Length: 169
Image (cartoon, rainbow, N blue to C red; front, top):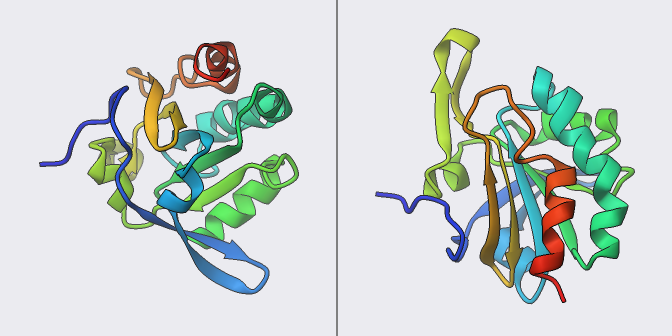
């Protein structure tokens, strides 16, 4: 059984996919985390209402301020294919804001941390719950998990901005 995501947990090894100019590449999570302060936020789906109108924009607006407070990388993860993620990153301004947008197409990482959920009535199977986290050298220091589907308050970029001071000197 997969370990449930929580503060104090070391994030598991995982590999994401990303579309770049030269084609699709594998992106190992361990390389992004080692010795760094990284914010990861997960959304149920690119181009879905709350993800598109609230969650991603909250991080786009706060990206520079998060970096100014010592965050080395901001990553968005979703259970979508890498082609969709690339187009969504461009459409939302995430690319311009320097947010790394990664695909977890088979929900492998999402299932490793027990953050998967399904809502067949909304056409969503094996997606990710909405959350944000701050990891320092791969260890989760802050976890903000939305309990209400469609809500984006606890996991929003401005919430994370208010929290990073406690964990980044």
